[in-house]
Image (cartoon, rainbow, N blue to C red; front, side, top):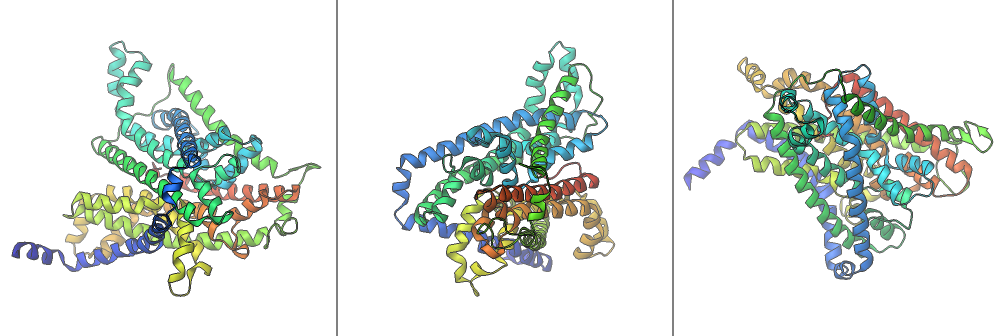
Length: 542
């Protein structure tokens, strides 16, 4: 009995107490603004008696089948398109690859409503094919950058030995390269499947009322049918699927990190030779196709029935046709900027604090399982439906002082919940890679923990912090799922305004939507170019 008490007391050092306080900040935010609303949804679904009727409904399982089917098809397509690009980024040395990296990354950080509208311009009929193509378009960057991060570390000598023994290039890839890349491929596939299964803006724009997933059905039941118990029951189904996918993704991520830890960085990039040029051409073709929706939407923003015109951009100063918007497009843009700024500041505070705590726990004597549990908990908002969380806010936050449901702070809080996991995944690998000997040397010279962080960690992690802030800002700027639930007509952000514009008839409304999408794309491209200028070798898990 005395020994456990002594160990517990030994852990209660000033540094340990400070670490506990630091951990309480992101975990407390997660508990109040994620766990509580989601548990409330679960309680509503279980207590209403709607779970069994929903689970036994053929319509429900049709929704489940379509949700999983389109996510699986999108994942396969993203893998097929992303692997050649991963080869190009990891194994080829050619001029202009920085532009290729930027072009691949742009779709991933575009707002979902922008991507949906771009594919509606390309494929006006919409439907499952459009949804699969749009989701794959979104996630090629996840596959390319995740797989390239491990592929860069593979030593070419194993492949060269197989080729010297008479194996063809295809057999060498299948028997040597692909097995070594399996941890990264499975990690990327789990992430992509998760994103596609919870896709909202793309399915809402391209699927309409005919093709619905669990995500859009939750939204429609809540907003249009006012069937809160039914929406809660569907949220239970979706949450179960998300948790299963997160478990698979966490296991795949551990295998990937182990594979990276066992390999030094190999200088494997070289000029392509022979059949490698065919793979390079295929990869460049994929990159070219990724640029098509972006270019088409930009051209459409200045094309009207009367010819080329900037009418859509000029109309952003107004509210479109009467009854479409209650505020001007410029006011909606200003709302977006304010909300994204607040959300980014909050997400950086929470995400960086969480990353520092996770690194400190891993360097200490805390069990690895406990560290991984906290890491997985912080990732939950990335997979759980933003629509579900927004729905949860509506039924819980009135119990807090001041009724946050009507507060302007609600949108930044919801956006920060989405952005914080991205910040953690970008910053955490960089902090873990810092040589502990540098920190130990600074501590030996008398530096306290705060000064070690300021003098050692911060300079080495500075670029990752800027990257996280840039990505966080652009993701918050384009967040559509939770914001569409929470924004009032006078606090609508630009993505919400775009959604309302394209849901109403009239060429002026459409031109305003195209112009607003183009402005969001311009901001996204600027952020991606900034990240490439910072020249981080990879963007965390993405």
